Length: 95
Image (cartoon, rainbow, N blue to C red; front, side, top):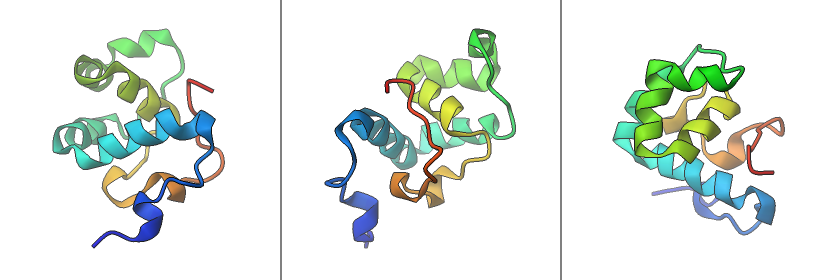
């Protein structure tokens, strides 16, 4: 049983919806979660980071998702952290 704040996106600003949906897709995908585990602790700083092995592997599945996860933070626990629980410093490369 999911808590309402984990699935009710009615209060998400329109500019944030793409990032929200990609993030929630990542949380539900065992493959993406496994790859994202390898991204923990890596500080993504510029375009050269696209060659980091975990980013590269994830980008082959979904490039936008890889960019989002690299921007949201290196120590993210996808399985336990819904989009609404991220602090206000979350970033979206599409805003």
